[in-house]
Image (cartoon, rainbow, N blue to C red; front, side, top):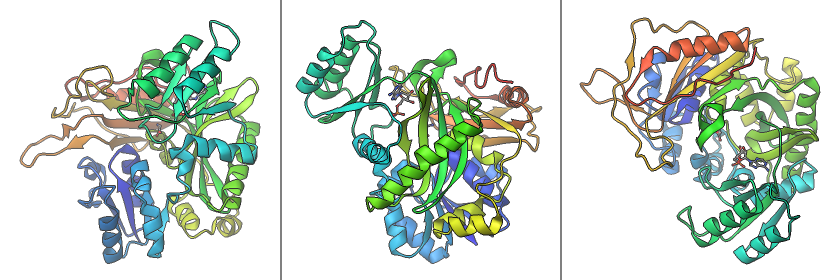
Length: 441
Ligand code: AMP
Ligand code: GLY
């Protein structure tokens, strides 16, 4: 069976690695991939098609007789890849454009959560800055009135402003709707209650009717140690999320994934692919902060190596809408996970994420010290790298450059092993956090 992975980052490197291990798979293709991937997967086929070129990807999949396609990034979903592949009777992991609204439209997601009775922050919707500011001014007059302002639509993680007071709230509304700080018109926002607690992510693999629990992780979104600095795509992660017990997992399955899936189906937009719930464990229970409709990056780079089962078996069952049957035959309700912990540390380019007025550096050589040696429980996943013909080294290409995942019996060992590996990799201006998974045992 030939598999195509769409995307070019660390998440896709992890997906390709898991596909390569599968007994079902004869060949793995990745479009567009990155040149670092071939270092650990020499047989991987790199396909020179961008992740948003849906027609080209479709023609490639048809010509190459790709049996299963796995979509990594949101941009490919937003380009309609799943609808097009399905029209052509190809098996693909991901949601349709309509179902992708769970991530792309905050208000759609909130409506579904309301109908499904899924616990989430209370919110109000506004179509003008005047209404929004009047609402903020009407809130109880506390100096520390916290709130979160979100604009509808995809804003590459920049459309959410956490405000610690009413005046910060008013400023955020003005910045988004009047001063247009995102560079485009924002005509529609929601203001929601601030949730206090520990943040984590949970994943479900869905086939429109049924789902299977697909693990948990804790991302570190801020650039610097102790959650300081600007928000990024994620600077490191550990898996599983340490704050959950069996009851919590049951709650997430029964009160979040199950009713969301049922409501999506009832609304005529069945959800297929990976449902990624961003959660807050508050004093009043677990609540949904947001849904994403794909695997997280870097979450998947810690989570996928922990799966003991053949991941492709599960993906195939989901793509064929046969999860229920597969669970029955395999006598499992979810994939078997290794009884281990994973810690993943990201190395990013100087200037990343580009929001502090410094330009993002690229074109630096990646240098590995002679002692760099991955053990079977270590994984090096590449993201923003390039290779110039005739040049010995891989070079940085901006953004998140690479990440190392280590698995061990405890978070402590996984963490020290991941940092041991990171200490042997260098490039000019490299930034990484030294506190991923700190304090966990
Ligand atoms: P989102 O894009 O919705 O994930 O929001 C980005 C980040 O903002 C989240 O990862 C949280 O850290 C924070 N955030 C979003 N909504 C809330 C909320 N209601 N309460 C507290 N923090 C939030
Ligand atoms: N790490 C967060 C995301 O993938 O959206």
